[in-house]
Amino acid sequence: QVQLVESGGGLVQAGGSLRLSCAASGSIFTINAMGWYRQAPGKQRELVARIISGGPTHYADSVKGRFTISRDNAKNTVYLQMSSLKPEDTAVYYCNSEVVVTSRATSNFWGQGTQVTVSS
Image 1 (cartoon, rainbow, N blue to C red):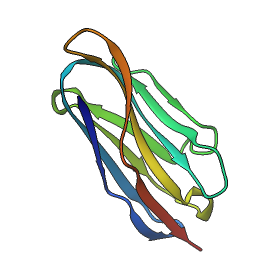
Image 2 (image 1 turned 90 degrees about the vertical axis):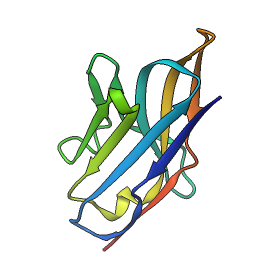
Image 3 (image 1 turned 60 degrees about the vertical axis):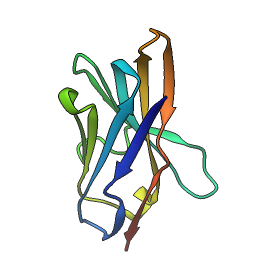
């Protein structure tokens, strides 16, 4: 129904930067919000950053000042610019989107995840 395709993960040294992208496609009427979550081994999935349709953003305290979320509404794409990366940022990063589909129902969709590894 709706597919989220992530890209941009990889291996980076501490202090480095990465940019994640997530493109939504399928039976989309409109997108209410898009965001990024992450899950490290042995830990619960946690919200990293989220952006609402009108532009308001929310960040986890642990990434404030280092990560920036942005969105291209025309492309149904969300980005996460990650800077000053730390080893504790190592995790699988998942894209999430709250989508109003063409039937006008609202659902949450997840991407397949992309690995981010930060070496010390």
